[in-house]
Length: 212
Image (cartoon, rainbow, N blue to C red; front, side, top):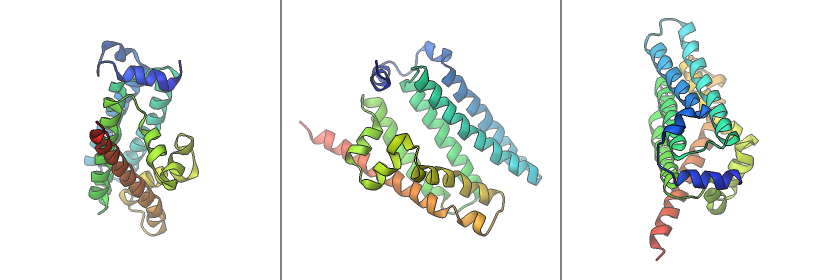
C-alpha cells in the first residue's frame, strides 16, 4: 500500500482514537508544545541578551522537531486526521507567537494570511481524501509548482522558509541593517505563495459546490 493511499484511509477514520497516543510523532508534537510554553515563559521573563537568544533558539528547535514529526509520521505510516490538525495548530501558534514577539509591523497581516490559508488547507485535508499539494500542482501556476516541487526540497522553498524564521529572529535580537532586510524578499515570496494557496483552495471549494 502506498503512503498516499494509506493517508487517504487514515483520514476517513475518527478524528481521535487512543492508538494515536502510541505514535512517536504524537509525542514529538507534545514535546513541541512544551517547548513553546517554555519559550513564551522565556520571552516574558527576558532580562538579558542571553534570554533573547534562548527564546530564538527554542523556537528554532520547535521548527526542527517539526521536520522530525513529519518524517516519523510518513516513515512509520502513522499519518492521521488528528496528526494533521495537531501539527497545524502547533505550527501556526508558534509562528504567531514568534512574529508578534518580533515587533515587526507586517506580523499581523502576515499571520492573518497564514491562518486563513492554513484553515483552508486543514478543511480540505480533513473533509476529502485528496492531498492538498496535488491540488496546488494541478491548479497553481509556475511559481506555485516550483515552490512545492520535490516536496518543498528546493532552493525557492528553502529561501522562503528560512527567511520566515530569520526575519523575525533578526528583529527580536535587534539586528538592524542588512541582517534584517536581507530576509525581506524571502518573506515576501512566502506571503505571496501563501496567498495564492488561499485563493486556489477557495476556488476549488466554489467549483466543488457548483458541480451537481
